[in-house]
Image (cartoon, rainbow, N blue to C red):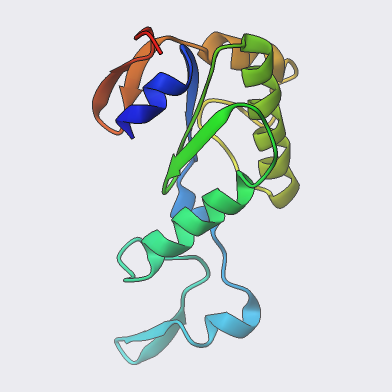
Length: 144
């Protein structure tokens, strides 16, 4: 994780909105995820944070959304995504691709609203050289 800072001097970090709530079970699977409470059976419609497999499902889903070719380094930890590179235009293109892939499946990102008319400007405002990633301050200005 710390080596990513050496892959570029600029980065963009985004976080998925209520990620587990966005991961819906299809109808055939829901019947396998149910519980009884006060004599009634309830079926889960989305992945519950407390489920043992929730982290794996969330992380693998994010990795699948990041599965595209780009010269920009990209990494994910469950619902947190970071793009690292030296060229702002390449960063914008990579994040735009990620946003388009998220929108195609109905996934939302905290930093970029669905009704945002100028996504490119929003992404450019997110580019930074120093910021927080998973609770740690990362300074991408270090020499390669």
